[in-house]
Amino acid sequence: MTGHADTIGEIISPLLTWYKGQAQTRQLPWREEPTPYHTWLSEIMLQQTRATAVIPYYHRFLAAFPDIAALAAADDEVLMKCWQGLGYYSRARNLKKAAQVIMKEYQGELPSTQKQLMALPGIGRYTANAIASIAFGLPLPAVDGNILRVIARVITCRDDIMAARTRTAFEQLLLPHYPTGKDAGALNQAFMDLGATICLPHGAPHCSRCPLASLCLANETETQQEFPQKATAKARKVEDRTILLLQQGSCIALHKRPNRGLLAGLWEFPNLTGQLDLSNVKDYLRKHQLTAVKIEKLPAAKHIFSHVTWQLTGWKIQLDTAGLTAAEARDQFIWATPEEIAGKYSIPAAFAHYISYIK
Image (cartoon, rainbow, N blue to C red; front, top):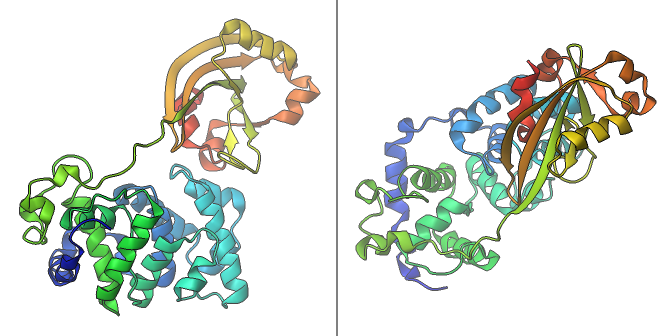
């Protein structure tokens, strides 16, 4: 590892002191009652998602599934609806799968060791260490982007933080200095808060307010913006999609995506690969024996996934009721009112751009 790792032991005490002194300034509901279930749920929700965005989903999810037993018995449609808008829906599925394992193998109590936690669906090393430290007081560093950024700046480490070996090296570097008990979880949360509020990933960090400023080599050499270093991200693939709002009276056609792959098992508006023009749309309707009363072009939109960008075109199509007698149309779609879509069916954010046009 590059950098000056010998200073790591010196950062623990000032970081913990800072965190305990400002704990009330960043109030998060899962910290108010850090039970193992609450900690697990919050850590899964916080993956790839900002804390402020998670809070309303966290409250809504706990209202529907107040404990592990309720989660294990969750209706899949209700589960997906509670998760709607958070994205990365496999997280919700894995929560239920893990809850079922916990009910079967651990009598409904979340296991406490890193090994047991990592054996559960959806829990990797970072999440296992976060849960084990916060809920059970084990001295395990939860190495995420915040820790990587803070440590890289403190010791001016130029290793690629996207490489697995760098994460492993940072964990091994921190491990001998981690406390036990409540301070273990507090230290991990201190890194999270420092990275979220002071040692920022974009723009200038607020070094004048940082408890580690006097120990940080990047601050001393005014090279903060050079750290952390990461390999150039691979460009996202771009795909063209055409969204069809097929409307019969007050009902809209929905289609369920396959159980594998992107947005698996979620409901969607019928859509096709490519940017379809009016003639292509009419060809689609003829193929499915559907008769349009009115066809309206909708504004273009874009949705960005972690690995692919969808360039979207939309068409709103009012159908002649007689056209719905076609067997293929009956079998391929379900028909739901806007109220049913809002209350029952989980529509991914990728299609949210067009939901306003069905109201």
